[in-house]
Structure formats: C-alpha cells, structure tokens
Image 1 (tube, rainbow, N blue to C red):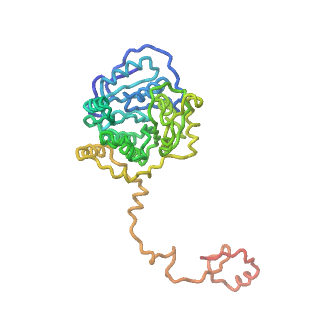
Image 2 (cartoon, rainbow, N blue to C red; image 1 turned 135 degrees about the vertical axis):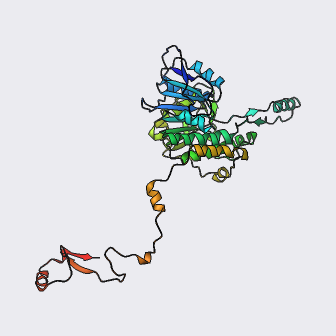
Image 3 (cartoon, helix red, strand yellow; image 1 turned 90 degrees about the horizontal axis):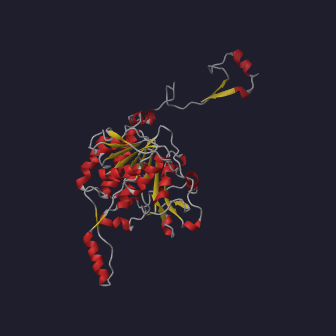
Amino acid sequence: MVYTNAAPASRGPGLAARRTPARVARSRPRVAPCRAELSKSSKVLITGAGGRTGQLVLKKLSDNGVAVRGMFRTEKSKSKVAKRLEGAEAEVDLVVGDVSSPQDVRGAVEGCTHLVVLSSAKPQIKKRSLVRIVLKKLLRMDPGRPSFRWIENGAPEVVDYLGGKAQIDAARAAGLEQVVWVGSMGGTQSDNFLNTIGDGKILLWKRKAEKYLMDSGVKFTIVHPGGLLNEKEGERELVVDVDDKILEGEQRSVPRGDVADVVVGCLGEEAAYDLAFDLASKKPEDGKGGAEVTALLATLGGRSCDYKINDDDVESLVLSDEYVGLEESITSMFPAPAPAPAAAAKEALPEVDVSELRWAGEETAEEEEPELRWVGETTSSATSAEVTEEKARDPADAWYSW
C-alpha cells in the first residue's frame, strides 16, 4: 500500500503525519538478489528517494516486504515515484521535505529504524557555457568544459554537509539502528575534478559529513560507488576496496542497480557495521554478475577507508556566513548528548597531593620493616607458648603483612 502526504511538507515536526492511501493493483514483486537483514518491525527512511538510485533502493526494499518511507525534495518527483510503486506489497510512505531542515528531517525519521542517505547536491549546467563550447567546436578550438552553478540552498555545503549533519543528528536522537550513507569515490583526492564544479568542493564536503557520521556513535555503513551506469544490473562481478585504490585501475564504474543491491544488503548486516568502502564492477564478460554482500565485504579483509588522508583539507573547510545560522538551528534542534555519569564524575574529581597519601589504617608515612605473621594470626606480639609452638610450624604457612 502506497501512502503519500496530502500536502507539501511544512517545516514542522508532523511531516509525514497526514497521508492518504492510494488505490493500487496487486502484482508479484521481484525479489532483489541482495536482501536486507531486517526484522518485520523495521522501517527504512530513504532520503534522496527521487533520484535514480534512490528510486531503485525504495522499490527493492518494498518488493522484499520491508516498510519504507521515501523523502523527496519536490511534490513533482514524489508524484512520479508514487505511480511507479503501484503494486508494492509493503507499506510505503512518500513525503516531501528539505534534508537541511532539522524540522523536516526530525519528522521524517519518526517511526523508522534505519536510514539510507542518498541525498546529494546536484550541479546545474550554465546554458551560456554550452553555447561557448559549440562555437569553439565550430572554430576547431579546444571546447573546454561547461560551467556549473548550484540552485538556491543547493550547494554541497548545504545539502551534503549541513543536510547530512541534520540527518545524522536526527538518526542519533531517534535511536536509529543504522545509517547507510551513499557517497562517492574520489574523496581522498582533494584535487579531483568534481571538487572544481561550481567551486563547490562537493567531495570534500561529503567527506566532512562522513567523518561526522563516524563520530556520532550511530552504527554506520559508508558506500563510495564509482561512476554510476544506467545499465542492467546483476551481470558484472562487483569489487570493493578502500581509499580510492579502484581509481588507479581501468574499471571505475558500476551499474546503479548493483549499487542499490549492495545498499539493501548492508541494512541490518553486522559485517557492514562501522565500515567504509569503495564499490565498482568489472566488465560483463569478466566474471559472474552480482555478489552476496557478506561474501563481498569479506574480501576487504577487515580494511576500512582511512579518513586521515587529506584530513587537513577537509578540516579547513569553512561554512559561508549565510549558512552559519542554519548550522546553529540544527545544533539547537539536536543537541549533543550529555556525557555519561561516570565520565562526568571523573571530570569532577579534585586534584590530590600524592605526597600525603596513606594506606588504609596507616598512621605515619614512615616505612616499616614487613612483619612475619602466621596464617590466622592477628598480632605480631607472640606469647612464650606461641613461640614454642612457632618452632613446629612450617614456614610455608607464613604471610608477609605488606
């Protein structure tokens, strides 16, 4: 059954509260190769559900009987996906909201157990730059690359970092069991071309948000797919690695459907907890297609991406002045958890002068020679009868009164 919210989402907490059931026809679902290891009570929120990969994850989960909620940026994209999900066996909620709005995100995570982050800033090509490229081609000159811009409040620092931060904080506050974050390869390369698009530094802002996720205390899985292909899934052998080593080879891309399968397979999979890895595929003729997620992750041999690489470049990122207020609103909506009582007590301990320390029962700091006492003896002052008895005792029964 597909549910959609009756009106475009407001910036209030009741984002998904109002919904109306849509009449749908029944059809037999296609089971995805990688199944989520989730309980019947689980419900997965997918942000960026209007994107191509987001739609695939939404459908694969619902086809497998998993309750899902998809979050869309516009009413138009939500309506398109609602039609494609007709016949879903599982409960499907479709809501509209802004991932950088703490109110919208808080409402969206309500009632969910897992979160899949597929939201991402998307550059827009400047049409004038296309005209320039065409003219240069006609003149047999190097056409160069087109210029890009970001829509209002759609830059990477807003969508990928602040939006990611809002989702992570909301997941932590709601006690979600796991966050599966879908980023991109190239994060270790500060000079990657993608960082120059619209001067947005998109890979660096994504990496900054990923580091925030790793420090949040929430179980996480971070997937860095290579170039996304709109080709048939399940026909290529999948490969995983870390720290952009895949970019050193020739096979750097992967079909969207295979990415969606891996994302679904990581949900509830303990082998995927607190793990960050890169994902690509071989050519269709190179090997058997698809992969079971647990076996695929085992090929990493326990390795995970190292976020100390280019850490200086990531930490040097500074929010634009116009977005500082937005970050403050996210922080106020989801304040950091208070330290544990034990930690708080430890911090409150007064300083102690160790030179004044005494052992329990000690009256002086002067050292004394250790006394030899027998088992069960309470004093070192022996009577004459005890001295006679002492000669018959085995020295192995003695204790030193340190």
